[in-house]
Amino acid sequence: MFKIIYDECVYGVWIKRNNIIFEKKRQTTESVAKEIVYVTIARAPPRIRNVLTEFKF
Image 1 (cartoon, rainbow, N blue to C red):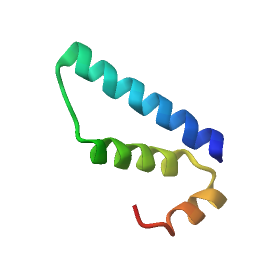
Image 2: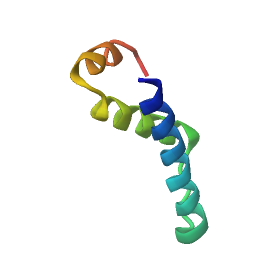
Image 3: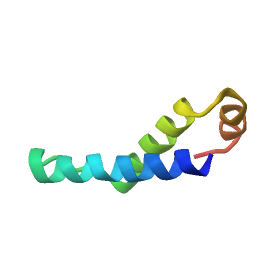
């Protein structure tokens, strides 16, 4: 579980950094965090997904 979260955080930050450098697009920290949470929940196994959807982000 923590590997999924870690991987998504690294990947999300890397993609957003590339958007800033190459496309001159910026996003708020909150929107980046929400996107990382969304992708993490979507990729999680069903048992873990049920636990994660209980949290309020």
